[in-house]
Image 1 (tube, rainbow, N blue to C red):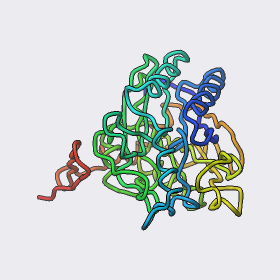
Image 2 (cartoon, rainbow, N blue to C red):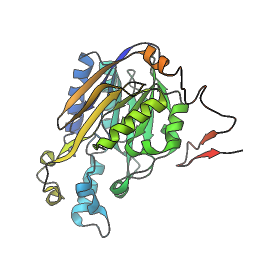
Image 3 (cartoon, rainbow, N blue to C red):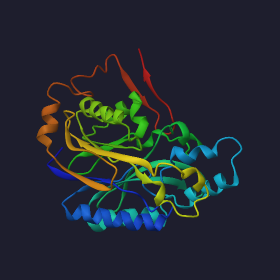
Length: 313
């Protein structure tokens, strides 16, 4: 890590299923964060343009209804395709504001739009897509919505001030996936998520202490009342208005909080990250340096496929 920087961890609702409206909101929030001195601005899991809540995503199981098919089509139509105007708009935001922008999106491939992926897109101040990670394995009800990712994004990108990378939600429970990111030299670890449970905070503390990296975790905040009136599965939204409570946080490499988790509201968390604290935390433990045993344990990453294996000799 070359120098101290300010990071912004955004906890906000999208304009649900509205691609342009969500990008408008992202532009406003990113500009506000940049105005407050942030050089790295991170948005939650599938902020663009909806996280598929378990409240309604289970409707995709079995013989899906017409309402389920309409909903899937709406998610696809509000998704981002790399190279398309929506992705280039994210690039323009990063370039115009002079920031590194990390955005959780529903992603499709322009030529083959039938499969949706959960992706993190890292855009540089030069307007380049510097890192593209797809969630390796959708969790529980998410398997009804997203395809599986591959190993191409198990990396960290050199931003000029630090190496930044990370994983999405429960793939953070995959030890080999974490090890792959650690091997890439990560110094600021992005852990975007929809998990608003208290147990998730224990996970963040563990990742910070294990990676000896700063951890930035933007969490999904979402209310049923924010869905459009004509949402095809609206009848499944009855009950508690809160679909995702948040819990975004920023942690130091020793596992302590630089910005405590916030629940039940939109907010942007800020923290200044100091390279001295990062290096000091690695004096006693460096998971891919002096505390690793490459003579015994070796990680092999298949970048073009979903598998990562440990080879033993």
